[in-house]
Length: 182
Image (cartoon, rainbow, N blue to C red; front, side, top):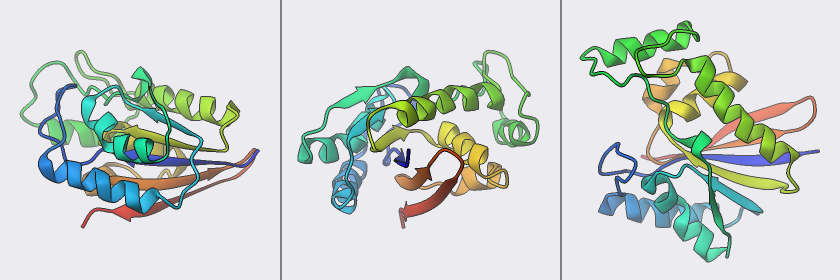
């Protein structure tokens, strides 16, 4: 049961709202990403339902005649529903205390569990190679799941777009960053 999952953070976007579109630069990045990924054999694409995630993978999907499935479990993590001027400090704290939860938000543990359900579904699917398109916060928690040293610092250095390749089998995994936007 060897599987490959390409974990993709969306391209440059005009905002954080679910309906925020890619910028003109982000649309160019999506085309470049499709070229970069063209040598990868992909059987299945699952994306956050947020517009910027779908637009990121659309050029690749169209070029390879693949359907983009959306999955609410790939939505960005909500840190809190109230404004927090010191949100960066609060976010950083959630990487050391995985149970820490702010008003209206979800803990790192809860968000990790959510994205791991998607990974496990992909592992159990017939697809040998899949693509998962999501957001920096939720992706950084997935990276932390597989590499405990990956935390706030890794989140802060993620680019738009960013791509990791996860090779996974029954008892082994290998995670490698294969793209970084300059």
